[in-house]
Image 1 (cartoon, rainbow, N blue to C red):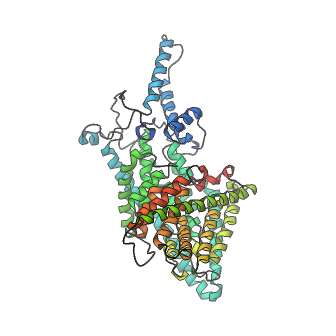
Image 2: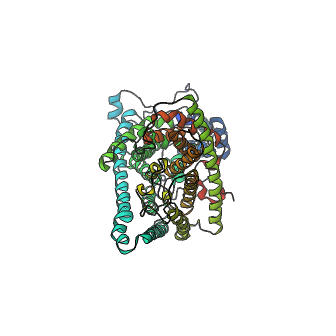
Image 3: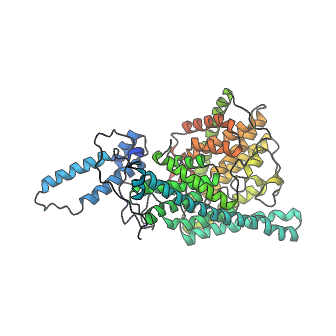
Length: 578
């Protein structure tokens, strides 16, 4: 397909005196070949690189995961393969040619870490008129386009999801079940919708194919720099059915996958980019835009998109500023179209924190350690669940409907007993943290469930938190698609409220937010973004010191727990411990 813009190389040789820098800063990846341009799924990003030993060395040197380091080395090998095409041993000067080839290979391997993408090449005017690759003007223009497109895409997803939720969980039952059945039988609506959506979730996977998940998205960012467009529709459909069925996964991961795919697609097809690192930048712009729009917090959302790509810190931090800028654009577009305000959405207590004390940091650190332990126990439990699923051969997509029904049984049963466990927890967080009655729940109908469960004591709050963690596990194990950020937030709020009952005088805001941060960071590895998002959505800026301490302690405490990078990795039964 023809491009509207074409990149122009400056043709300059790399500076031999450039100091050695970590690859995430000074990497210039090879160009994407025509075979990579195919949006099909034949390019499996989960394949093992042949440069394993070199990757392990690079990983040890730069504190990278071997799979990521292998990707950087693979980029250079691809570039050298292209340079070597057409050379044969029948050349007149074959030996000198081979020696020259070795020198070029050595130079290219050295330049892997010493050839940065220059953002300020000459003047702003020349960089803009020539649309130079990686320059600031190019980044600004592409960020504007990606932000607008992803903002519109996020709005379409949001409008469909909440329109269907309003119809299925309010309009339809109030006009049918509420009229035809006595009040004590209204609970039948929960299993009716829940099991129907379970079947449709599994059916969508069988018919449309594997939609992928957050782990797949991250793997594609590292290995291919973009996500294939043929994952967009399967992810959109499967996630909508998953969320409509009351599963404990939210829209954040589907939006990340969809907008990441759009960012990479626009980069390659509309702007004709071929440099892998440039395409990756635009893919990250899409991810940042999705989370900024969803959370309403552009700084926290954009940082989350960058942090989630690494087990410790911010991966591809050279693209941070452009990604945040794209997040701002996407936020404006999405919030303008949806009419949603930009601001806090939770009120934990009527009185806000007026300040912070040094002891709050220590309390936050202790709560972060406790949250990390809860997350650790969750991964062990989830591993057992996945092992059982694998034992019954339910992880094969051929049996996706059966698998979804198994998960749906637990989701519906918990929803009937404890209605607060249904859905992804964005609105439920406010009800849980403030101990509001079940009648304030926005999504489920009827709000009383089967038994009229209420949060009134330490025991009920603990039971709520425990049940939410179980619901998250079976939602993932059932093959539902969605994000687990808000579900972990909701579980953390319940555990925080339990501690407030047990420890009189413990600050409610600090307890709920720090427990939420500790659990989420242990799983997602996003200490900076999680702290910003929680304090922003709760409208508690003075809690940031305690919440950040909780996040950092949880991050350090779970550093060597490799399987805790993402619970989506536990879809692979080989990673599950019985």
